[in-house]
Each structure stands twice: as structure tokens, then as C-alpha cells.
Length: 454
Ligand code: ADP
Ligand code: ASP
Ligand code: MG
Image (cartoon, rainbow, N blue to C red; front, side, top):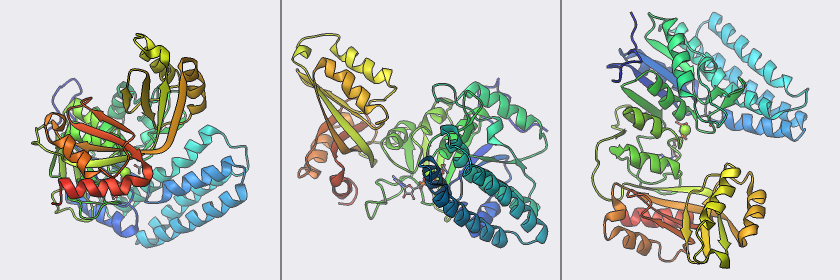
């Protein structure tokens, strides 16, 4: 029986869900067992998207960095330590000698592959191959665990269907066609496991959807199969009203709109990869956030329903650089802005915030890959100044930019912090300020105290 909706149908499949489990959720043998029990209790057809075990991708980034710097000896030390970690995972996860052997062999193969990079010159593409090992290992371990527990499931290789194009954007047509074919090959299966984060690029090479990208994988898969829900299982009981890493006493938000969640994720709420919401919003698929370690907690539902007035949450995005271009020639000159924007377009560098005065324009970027070239080109149009180590603090809530008192309350709450830029009115749902990163924690706490914890 074919369990997935036909893709010609515009409605979503009545019972198919996509569930993504993050790094902590699969971060230990205990948690892997917990996730397997959670899935065994579900009757609906499911596609399960897995992250690497917590900490693994960070370690792989370090290994790749060492190899890039030509330090294979230190890279080997880290590879050995990571392999040792996985050997202990295998010996505690599996109960039977047969699966311990299967698990050990799989780990050996991945680490032999990793070590192959310590002998040769290291290329940019090989970095991506190194980073991909985390999800390949976690999904293989999980699939073996399900097999050992006699829970029927099929492991789908994301590298067979997940792809980005030349612009690094998901190739949605390719994803749908190829995932569909993979699913058609297993008409009787109700539980599919696959890897988040990893994909192929337009040249067929191994690539990824950037850090935290498993959330994005889940929403792309959800759209491709017309899922009725994408559930992001993580280590916290929902989307909180502020960043719990910097603010005590934050609270989960029961309901958010797609637009609110998209703004928060884009402006730094780490709980969701910044691109996760848009595909789900376009396809009308609710995104639910749940806590793997506390499934009874309500979590957060992100849908197209209106969610009411007021500030819902605060987020912060670090690593921002503000650039000011000052030019006497801007005075009354049309065409000036176009020339400025063209420079950022040429270097494929997105702009986050922008403000203008009669003789200058300030804007922010977070990608410094072409910063020197951008500054050189901008100098043709005026003097250029840059401030690094800035943070965008963003208050989000439906229609807050048209509620008369919210902006003044926000500025009062952070009145002792120097604000470098303000963005107001660009979106009805968002008021953003740019401040030096050193004041981020203070600003986040002040805003929580004012808006949520009177
Ligand atoms: P996963 O590995 O499951 O993808 P992440 O670490 O990527 O988990 O995201 C969950 C973490 O995001 C939380 O543990 C929390 O520290 C952080 N976080 C930042 N902002 C928020 C927020 N507004 N609500 C909830 N968690 C947040
Ligand atoms: N493992 C990847 C990372 O740590 C992807 C993810 O966890 O979402 O960035
Ligand atoms: Mg994440």
C-alpha cells in the first residue's frame, strides 16, 4: 500500500509526519533508546530526520580546521578520541554480539575514511565530506538499534535525494522526485530514517545545509512528501520567549505564527535553523516543537493562525558588522542606493538592516567573506566606516510595529545601552536594534524583565 499522498494533490497527506531529532535527542545511548521507544509508540507513517550526536559536528569542524592548517598529527589525536567515544556508544547501545559487531564495523569504516584525509592535501570539498560523517554515523547506529529491537524501518540515504543548486538553494523539484522514488521502492514501510544536514550540491559533491541544518532538512522533506506536520524534537520544551542561554526565567510559547517564527529564527533564535519556516509556510505545514526528554510538555505550534497582539519573543543575532557609507554626492542623488546594493549583490552578501540619512547610509551584514572587496568598491561612492562585533536584538510579535507604545517601551527598557541602528516599520512583526555585542546579555535581560516578567 502506498502511504504517501500523490504529489499532484494540493492537500497534505492526512497522516504522514516528519519528525526531526536534534543532537541532544540522539546524543547518548539512553537518548537513542528513548527516541526509539517514542517512535515505536506511534502508529502513523513517519519520516525521521536525525542530526549527528551532540558535539560530533563541532569536533568534525575542529578536525577539518586542523587538516586545513596542515596539522594532521593533531587531527589524528581528535579522530582517535572521537572514535573511542563511538566505540563506547556501540558497546552500551547494543545488547547482542551480532549488532555490536555490525556497529563496530560501521564505526571502523567511517573512521578509516576520516583518517584517509590525514594523508593527502585537503580541499574545500573534503571539509564537507568530513562534516557529513556525524549524520551518517548517527543514522546508521539508530537504524541498527531499531533492527535489533525488531522495529521495522528503512534507512534512506539523504545523499540520494537532498540537493542544493548553484545558488546554494534547495533544489525542490529534484528533492521531491528523488525522495518519491526512494519511498516508492519501499511500499510496505511505515517508518523511514534519514540524515538531516547533509546533501549534494549542483556538481554532485557532498555538501550541507549549514550549521543547524537538520531542521531545514526536515521542513524540505515535509514539503516534498506533503506531510501533515513537521515535528522538531529538541532538548527544550518549545520555542521560548527569550534565549535561555542568556536569560533566566524564559517561558515556552504555545503558539507562534509562521511569520513570527521565521523572523525569530532568522534573527538568531538557535532553536530553529533560519531557513526552516519558509518552505513549511508556503506549503501550509504546521511546525511543532517538542522536548524529547519531556514529551508530555505542550511545546510550541507554529502555524498560519493569528496568535494575538504584543511582543511574543526576543532574539539576538551576533557577528554583525555595520557599514556606514557617507557621501556628499548622495544628496538628492537618485541611483545612489542601487549602486550600493549592486556591490553587495556582486559579492552575494545579504544585508540585514538598513537606515539612511540625507548624506549617509548604514547597513549591516553577517557574512564577512568578501568584506575587504566590498569596502574597496564602496569607497568609489564615499567614505566608508565599519563597526564589528555588533548584535541585532529583535523583538517579534504580530503587528507590534503598529502598536503605539511598544517601540517606546522597548527603548525605555534598554535606555542605558548605546543603540547604533534601529529598524522599525520594515516588517509589522519586528522591531530591531543594533547594539555592541558586549551589551547583548544586558539588553536581552532588560527586555525580558520589561515584556515578560513584570
Ligand atoms: P538541536 O540539537 O535539537 O537542534 P539546538 O541546540 O540547535 O538543538 O537548539 C535548541 C537550543 O536552542 C536550546 O537548548 C536553547 O539553548 C537554544 N535556544 C536559543 N533561543 C531559544 C529560544 N528562543 N527558545 C528555545 N531555545 C532556544
Ligand atoms: N549536526 C549539524 C550541526 O551540528 C546539523 C544539526 O544538528 O542540525 O550543525
Ligand atoms: Mg539545532
